[in-house]
Length: 264
Length: 264
DNA sequence: ATCATATAAAGGTATTACCTTTTATTTGTA
DNA sequence: TACAAATAAAAGGTAATACCTTTATATGAT
Image (tube, rainbow over all chains, first blue to last red; front, side):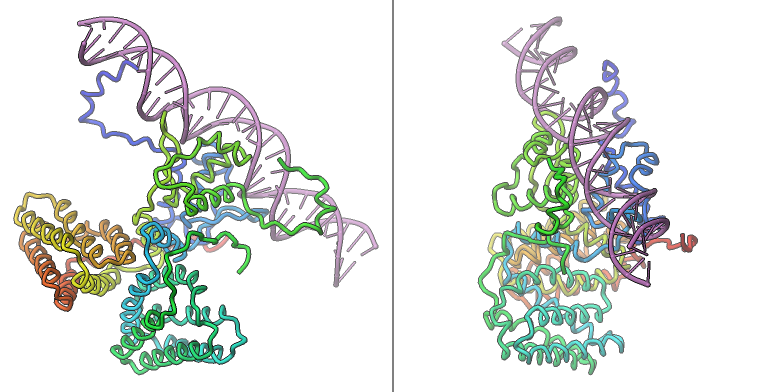
């Protein structure tokens, strides 16, 4: 207790040690191990008791570290025999969650989201037209046609329609050959998916048909390697959601409801 | 607690409960409480022991829930008297973290990031020129001038320069009056901040001066309410980072992927 | 063969005790 | 009186241990 007196004299020599909690240290070490390539996606870590021995800490401490990694989407925990702690592939989902929380707090509106989306997707389509592989062009065409089919069937649930629509947009992002765009697109879709409930006209065949023909037009532009046209059409497509006043005045809702994970 | 031994006989009556772990349940409840407005930023939760009593679980379980929330950036934990668990303001930092992890694993390159940034920021500048408030225009001008000053002083640390640069770009996003853009900008800055270390020329006065005049030009375009010009200048500004080959060839440190361990 | 039961590995939770950090408050001395 | 040092108390951090629950596989009975 008294030795603190010479802290001043040593103050310049030693660097202040931040009080790192044990579980944090463990979490960091595991993260590093992943980034260094010592652990790769799908690998299973030793069980909690062994980890405790390895790091020389108690099991609760190990578990806290795991919880932390789990919340970040770095590992996944499965119970039962052949269960354990597995390294997971980071999902864009995580970005979406974080983004969503941020948006909520900052009071972003759907209007703002649509606005961003329109230019973002337009540019993405532009790049896709320039870089899409043959396979991607084909996939896009198929998806667009699938959307058209569903569109003409009023009895088809809107979920199916939305699902295909999302797939199409993500494929466009993929075709842009830019992983950042893919990530952001997925994140946005995550937020948007909730808001799809707000689309008033998703059940109207006329509206659906219009959307479908939009997608077909975009797919064609990409196929013809016409970037400018692809951009224009995509912009119009997304923009239509504003003009048509399809999106209700709406601030991001106060309920996430992502807990029901057993289903879907 | 629990221990209903007659569960077997009741098995057909009650609906299967999805195996929700206790700590998850708690985490969700706390999240909900926040979203419902029952808890707001800055509030302090009861201490761990009390929470245990409230939820009727043990302290370790409570702690796991807290770790989970902490990792998501929802709460913050402080030790000592007057310490405790506090609701935190969601930071864009979290989005950046998630984005960064995603980029790492998807093998995104800095080039891709710059590519996205160039169009994203250009459009943001376009909107800023249309919507910036008077105060924002003023702030932008001040920031640009500050950058110019620092630029001419070689002895100024590069951190200072970068810091001002970041502030400028975030102010532009802010002026676009779109919270989504602000969020994404902050996230990107987070990732970019790390990579700033890769800027080879940040110490060169010539390069710094060039950057500074770029910003001044952008600020002017916004002040003159010339969206097209603002977009053009911002695009050139960001693009310059590619052309000038300032960013070294650099793939986000991907795993070594030494596939020695074939299987087990 | 088919269905049911047992087994074992691994995570989930509960208890309890004690350590560490942190800051307000008290105490003591110049 | 004023400032510095010791103290106390609140709250999180860690340890140790026992037992419960989940679940894939194996085993056995019909």
